[in-house]
Length: 412
Image (cartoon, rainbow, N blue to C red; front, side, top):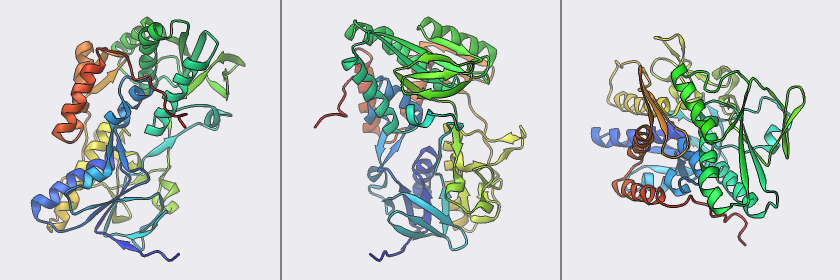
């Protein structure tokens, strides 16, 4: 069947945090400045996912709808378009993107297609592990964990987390909290052991010593079994194999050990460096100023630190806002632009329910207040007053009862 090539002024590829924020900010900029240009945002899913909260979805601390926003709702009452399709390739020379539903031509293109899980070629890792990088992944982990609780005759359940960075520690904290409270009450016949494996000698080895030590104490108090200085060499269906052939029994293995940059999957090799797109200080590609890259797809060295800008949610959010302003100013004929710069305001990290860490410069806060601030910062990020109100009420009521432990995946 013949497909018709679509045309748009600004094409945003990917509706993760970076792409979502680009659309949201740019739609406002165009409207405010009276610029009559059309935005098309493309994603394989019809919803935006707030990834930093997916570990809480997996452990039933929040419901899936609390971190997923329909993209049709995003474009509602705007002159712009959401196009559901899978991006296949980008041809900067012809300014055309091939998708699973046909080609789209553009004037400006913003590449925000994210990254994928890096299994480091470890045998069995891709086949026998779960992740919390997508809503589908978090929900599959949630459903399969509940199914084990409901149907596994064994009284002992072992959950193994590979990777002791931010995500691994957050996952460990959530599932340990789940085990010591809700599971102990609702499934008293089961004991859940949560393990975390880290190749280096320390968990959170990039965090300040004060933070690392307190968080490690916290997850130990929750009952997490810590294996540091241990390298995973293989993953089996029911076990994780460490170097020296030490075997750790596992009913569920969660992979949080790293991500893989994938810009070379979509663009010609001359436009990509180590899986990312090298950009100028204005976030345009060094070889094509009609092409932008943000989020995990962007490669730009921070001149104040002489290292690439971090691949973090906070950075992606700011990159999206910057690109929106940059494109709008270009349409207004502006020639001078302030270079992009990003300085993290701090770190907000939950470790189980009602305990977290907040760092701002040298200031560090632990405990309930840090956890509460983190929740409210994320709530502020979500669009719409009614949505904020509904989720705030849900979270408040949810904290007074049990976690979300419904398993619907196998309904017929």
